[in-house]
Image (cartoon, rainbow, N blue to C red; front, side, top):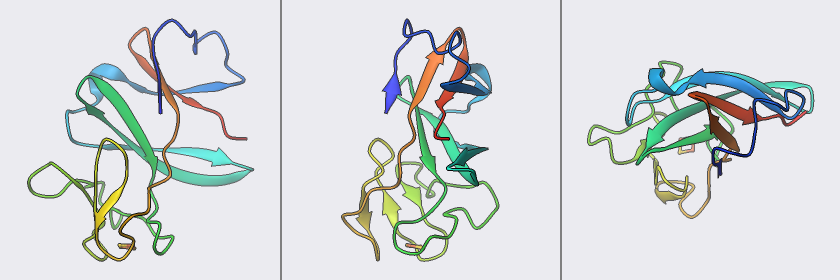
Length: 126
Ligand code: FES
């Protein structure tokens, strides 16, 4: 989910948290960030894809463990799919749909982000 510019995320700090600079996000490489949901600390990852920012919870839908094995690498060798390093599941980077692996057909938990004034904001979940 992506909220476009003009929706003024920056002016609503109770609803949005600034998590990254657009210029620091590599294309088809992910960066991690932390957030809270219901008071529980969680980890997410985000990346650029075709001019947009995508963000997901760093957790497989099959077993709730991090996709990256802790090393910050989320893409397969072709950079066309998100990879679960634990069991090799592959996910569509535009939707988070698992296209191969133990959780085939399930979606990663997508997080709502907004791009404004060169910053990426995450919609608060607490
Ligand atoms: S933990 Fe689900 S595919 Fe790896």
